[in-house]
Length: 102
Image (cartoon, rainbow, N blue to C red; front, top):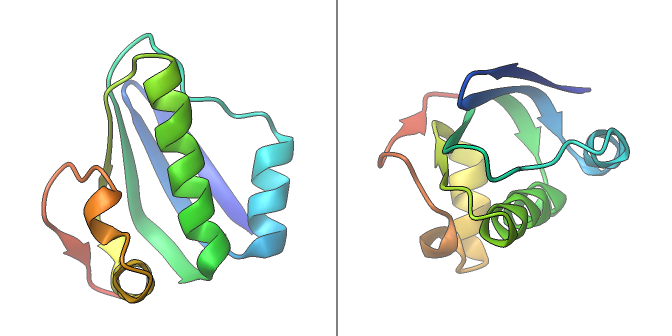
């Protein structure tokens, strides 16, 4: 199960980002809007699969469409490994070059 806590200018993501979890998340119609810059903190994410990357790129697409400055922080090591394997890590907008210790 995945949960997102929204604070001013920040989303704190926790739980797993697996197929069923991402489907539930997308069904909630959570959208990146253009009202401000947004940091998505992934420190609380445990398990991931390739659909997690799809979700992150969907949020990038929404941010660009809504002229919102989006950045990801605290990518878990398993997500960094997956993004590196697929050759897409450099396409993720990072707030800082940091990886959570999972």
